[in-house]
Image (cartoon, rainbow, N blue to C red; front, side, top):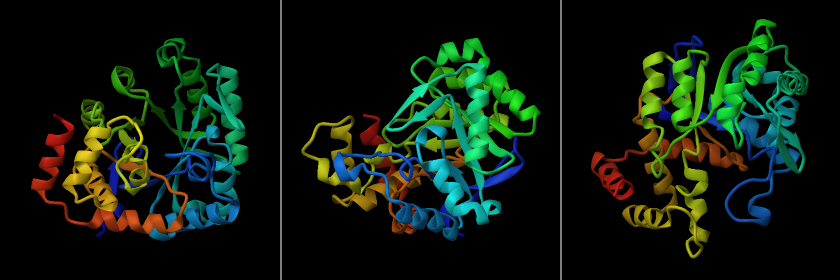
Length: 303
């Protein structure tokens, strides 16, 4: 069994997701390291190839958001005949106003956003709806309108399970609230802040989706053209690259193996603008990384 396609059970939803999931941000919205063409979302034809490559590979989780501009639209446009093959997770609270986004966490805005996503995705029910927190998440939690809107939509049969995309102490608060079935958190070799939250989710049977598992490209070959620029964690990235002989793909393999070895992680959300990259990530995750190499990497990042 390929590690990427290993299915990890989420007790609270009674379903299993492939360890490698697909984050659909890059197929709908300009994103990524660098500027200009490097950040541009693919055209329709390329987005279609990417989405079919995801399902053809056996990946069964696609994560999107209404704020990802054309992402939801493209998922239904190209995968409507294959809807039974994947679990669909989307988000509310951050809204698309292309080329920008805006935040509105009021009950009315969130209910309308959920209905828009249902219409956009041409489906009667969304598997997982997550709160897409913005600059003041504590206020959103305290006011409770967003969660109330989601729970009402759930009672109406529009949503199956509830999730939230958040980190740190506020993530801990939501995990302990018992209201959420899935938590989406940032976690990677360079930033292990949410390690205790991941363990707490495992205790409670809550699913964990990892975003930024490759640190927005810093733990991949995409960082290589930018090594003369200034960026966060640069010293550690350079040291990790030296550890793997300057090979960007080996850096990715190392980063993916670090995540794979955490049993509390249900799925890591990795995006791509290129269909061939899906297969490459699966192959990189399959590579054997020695305990010694991983220990050396952890010494570098935890120094």
